[in-house]
Amino acid sequence: MAGLTYEKQSYADLNGWAADDHQAALDVFLNTSPTWADRALAAASPRTFFEDHFQPVLITDSAPMVFTGYFEPELIGSREQTAQFNIPVYGMPADPAEFSRRQIEEDAPFADQGLELAFLSDPVDLFFLQVQGSGRISLPDGTMLRLGYAGKNGRDYTSVGKILIARGVADVNPDTIRKWVHDNGAAGQALLWENESYVFFREITETLADQGPIGAMGKSITAGRSIAVDPACTPLGAPVWIERHAMQRLMVAQDTGSAIKGAQRADIFFGTGARAGELAGQVNDGGRMITLLPHADAQRLCGGMP
Image 1 (cartoon, one colour):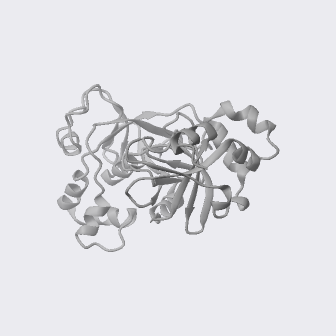
Image 2 (tube, rainbow, N blue to C red):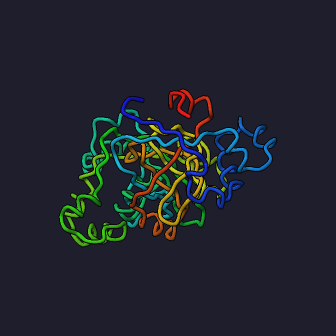
Image 3 (cartoon, rainbow, N blue to C red):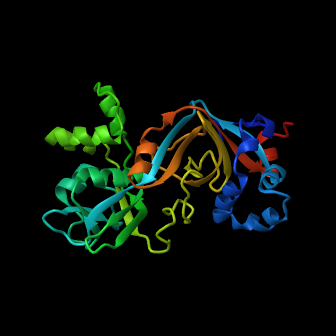
């Protein structure tokens, strides 16, 4: 791809490579790339499978590495609208593109189309559900409704966290964003409207309760081993070695995200629920990521470099 630089690395260049749990990474990799299963079974070990079949390649553009984190929220809601639960979670409409977030929430253009999958009590819950792209809703009867990404309105994603930082708000994270919105009334609502991107959902029934949410490849993703990437730069399904602070680990590129753009950009999946949210919210730092490409692809992209 134009604007990208490809540089071969050796496994000796990967800090902490020998100490990783390669079996855990292999299990996740085969979940979305089962065609490699026979070669993995024939390998002497999970580590040698990767070393024998893949070439580490550093893919860069003009932007520095940025790691962030994401998670699957677990919220409380209802399938029916009530006085408490009155914020709709919509399924995908036929033509969402002409409406901004504010228009959808103020004018309710989809209210009579039967698209409501559930209702929440807090507009901030809906906002963060949309930012994460998936979630679970605990219903009054004790059952769980799982939602996955279905599509969006096509508007650009805007980080409300960056807006608050520009306004001088310190220590911006999901909790401080939530508090700021709740404490500032109409100004809080207006902050959410700054992000015109609006995500629609579908009900997920094809995964077990103990499995992760569905990623961009149509399979469950795994806490601590799955990342979201820019597929224009990093192939979906590729093993990706990441190095950030104490986390040196082989991940698998199994998801995408509206804000994930660039060659050195990754969103680390931390799991489901409040604790996962806390961990994900703490991540906004640098490092590097190195993609493991099949030898033929690495040879083609790197121009035969040794």
